[in-house]
Amino acid sequence: MAFFLVCCAALALILILVFHPTWLAWRRQRIQTNAFPARWRKVLQRRVPMVRRLPVPLQLQLKKHMQVFVAEKTFIGCAGLVITEEMRVVIAAQACLLLLNRPMDYFQNVRQILVYPGAFAVTRVSTDAAGVQQERRMALAGESWVQGQVILSWQDTLEGAADPADGQNVVIHEFAHQLDQENGAAQGAPPPAPGDTRHNSGRWSRVLGAAFEQLGAERASGEIGLLNHYGAQDPAEFFAVVSEVFFEQGALLAQQYPDLYGEMSGYYKLDPASW
Image 1 (spheres, one colour):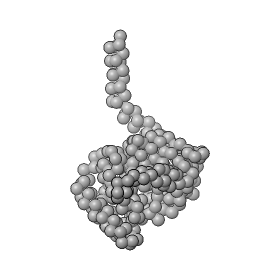
Image 2 (cartoon, one colour; image 1 turned 180 degrees about the vertical axis):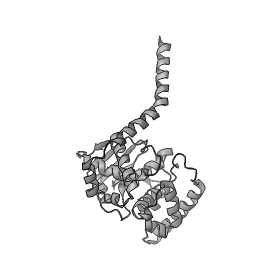
Image 3 (cartoon, rainbow, N blue to C red; image 1 turned 45 degrees about the vertical axis):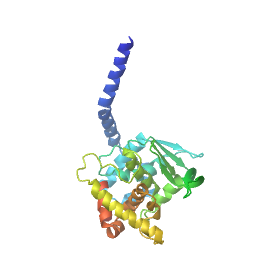
Image 4 (cartoon, one colour; image 1 turned 30 degrees about the vertical axis):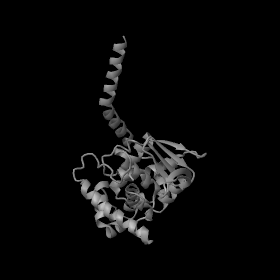
């Protein structure tokens, strides 16, 4: 009897593994056939002006992605914040920009999106030059965890969406980290989209490595350029910072960092400099 139960359980697991992708694709297609809610359209018009800059085909694609994203992701309010439909729509619109033109699995590792009213405090342990560990409190606008959580400040989310040309967007930043974390800890080298045969990891490393070093030199000298000095911390933060600028200031990035823009455009399959 026990052997029979084990066999049944194993068979059930195999069936799930085999048929789950097909069922998931069918479910997502069903979701995308629904009309985009008119009230969501009003939220986009009021809160996410970047959407108006997109070519019409990308706008339509974005809305379909948003419908799946909102249906599949769990949003949790923190510090007394009550999650509203508007919050889901605003976050989804910005996160799904990173999915346009790419056969991605809707941030497959993201299980929960935790939203605070404003910046939230975290404790970090750092080691100084003498090897002494110290705890320090930091206020953050967002954070991305390998365990499947993205944490966002709603205030910073709104501010990032309100100005689509300032190169600062916490939602793009944190979901870029999630792309980077799809093959483990973020290292500034996200895996290419399935079927992308044009991605060259060696060229990516050279181009982003050179730009990362340039940003580090700018930070050391106090020079203020297009890229935020926050990206000089490590390659993972550099990729996330460049992603913000790529989507919001694509023309400037293409002008000042043409090779870097080329790599980002090849990865994201988009040309925001032309929007």
